[in-house]
Length: 452
Ligand code: PEP
Ligand code: CO
Image (tube, rainbow, N blue to C red; front, side, top):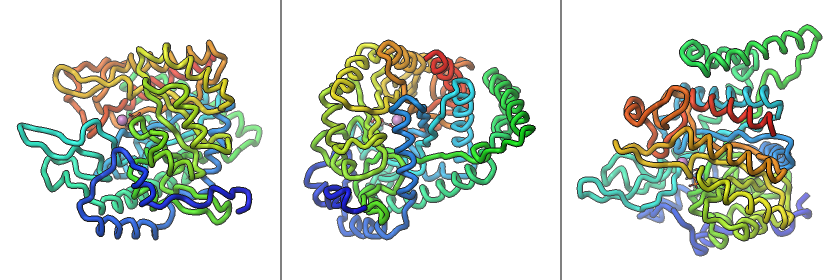
């Protein structure tokens, strides 16, 4: 129904957006090369469908109403080298395992969203990096430049945006195959973690949940019930909408609704460093119909949040905007209550999600960027406490994790120490929870949800 949305159909051009001004953008030396790449991207098929984005938006509306819980997770930064079957399967596996634990132990529907198939561009606190007296442009994610510390690798190369498209396309293809082709079948849930059950206490705990679910499944089968939900899962993609060339080229008018959708992913978010009310990111995302997230750090005021909401969702479409707070464990109990209260008092209904990662990063003495599992848990606890005291709904969890047994965050059941970090530290950006830490987090959150 084109007439229902008279103002939404036109979107600003890339030049309009550049004129508005955007933080954290690549600087391409050759604008002809850049424009040619954007033209190529504009002709590429959509990576996701508008109808899927609508379905996720409806699910996020259920989260905002307190009827579902969001689990969103994946790498801080995906890499092209990391686009392998094993890596993708491992990430999917840990997210599905966490979702099963949350669904079973807390009896809440879980909306499953990966930070994947597009999470290739990173905002940085500094434009440059210096090593041994040599200064080069900072690594901004594989979407922009290479990690290797050479002038050639660190050059901002627009061709990489095409590589992002193809990497995202093959990741999504595999995810679609896994989630609909039998791998996500609940009867497979033992297989997801067999290698790990024997070696880890949290693995054993997972296996006990699995045994209970098996009994429930056997009962259902005995009475002849076999719902489709047991065999497939709705899994969605998300990433930070950062590089305007990429997001703009993949923003298309949907012929069914006549509205623009960013078809680079189902859910896109605006980062803490690019959420300026009058900036280009907020402008572009205010035109799209996808569900979107906005990261809110400790300096955000309630007035900022309300103004962002009004700009991003003037029609007040349910499920369109999610606020993802990342205050840090020490600040959440002080800052979150008044934010929620004032936003609620303004009549704004959003899903509230906690990102317990980005406010809890520090460097160890031996030079690793890490996070302490206890601080992560503490921020999540603070999030639940605040919502419980206000009578509002703790809508979800946004985490950086991997399905592999890396050593990037300290603490957790296996008590990783700073000295252990060198064993398997692989991230090119922020430290991620490993599989055991992620599952442990899921069990703890399930308990918190159960008491809510
Ligand atoms: C991120 O999610 O990787 C990130 C950079 O977060 P933030 O914008 O909250 O700092
Ligand atoms: Co990060």
